[in-house]
Image (cartoon, rainbow, N blue to C red; front, side):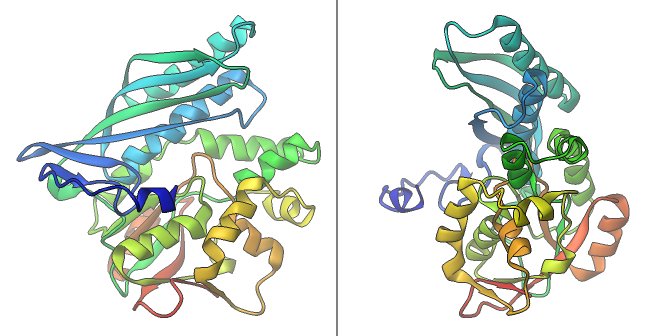
Amino acid sequence: MDQVLGTLPRVHNPNVLVGFDTADDAGVYLIAPDLALVQTVDFFTPVVDDPYTFGAIAAANALSDVYAMGGKPVSSLSILAYPSDGNLEDLANILRGGLDKMIEAGCALMGGHSVNDPEIKFGYSVTGTVHPSRIKANAGAKTGDVLVLTKPIGTGVISTALKRGIATEEHIAAATVSMLTLNKAACEAMLQFDVHGCTDITGFGLLGHARELAAASCVSIEIEAAAVPLLDGALAASRNGAIPGGLKNNIEFVSPCVAVSDDIDTALLHLLYDPQTSGGLLISLPEEDAGQLLSLLPAAQRIGRVVTKSGHTLHVL
């Protein structure tokens, strides 16, 4: 997709404040001097067995892109692929889970679209609002900034371990709670500070999204591997070979721009590439603000810093 998007013509529109040029989390369109729309879409196949929980996670994941831009979700449309002979009770629970999460976010569900498909897929198109001067794009990180991650990582390997029957109930429960947690509180907290850049951690993994942040900002990033928060059971799942296909794809795509210290555990390094569902926010902000932000978000951790652009985009220490 990255290669294909690069072939498309760039059509200038002065109202497009954030487009697809910088691989940001959502597009932003100016509709008034003090108001812009944030627009995103995301859907995927089930990551948990329970239909209600799957629907709620799909909603939280789609909402996350708006929060990553510093926006407030206001409306949504559902996107559903479901087999015509599928269980209607399961379908109702998927939709109910998504609706409940939208209600929690204060985001109105306006309708949606469905197609007959033997493989279940579900998600949302979400529209939010943001003041044009308060957009938190991925292109603003500055040398000297601290990087804060608001959720632990590891949902991809734990979901794969679940499919292979090697994940414990406790580890699955912890990953589910994380995926169900909206990034609303993290967004509201970061808006109290001079945040220079932000992105959410989803399918491209921590290093993939950090790469986008660095590339858009023309900087390099140092990640302290030992400081990255991990979900309980994630490291064990990685060591036991529960490696999702998306993780392998991320390694292939991102690793050429990553310099890794010799003493980094391979299983831990794999987790830095692990594709996340409804992951946390990666926030770039000044050193003097980082401590205050961390005090507002108990689950968040400082994981690295922004440095002057060098030969490698990312450095794992």
